[in-house]
Amino acid sequence: MWVDDDQWGKFDFKTKACYSYNSHRFTQVKKMLPIIIGALVGGVGGYFFYRYVGCKSGACMITGNPYLSTLYGMLLGGLVGNILK
Image (cartoon, rainbow, N blue to C red; front, side, top):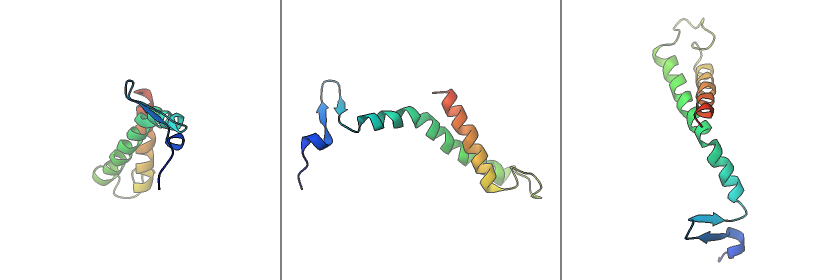
């Protein structure tokens, strides 16, 4: 099945940019990329904090639960990614 150029847009080889209808969506994702990467790294860090440092008795609110520790790490990582943007 052949696709028309109008559906995919045009590629300019001088500026190395793709002019298409969906290019605005890609620029939004590109702007949010540091936040997404920060959230992923923070989530992994939050889980490792639970695994190796966390509260073993289960009495601690955040570090006693792996899900809350991971979510809290994702929140902090996303905030740091937003600051570094």
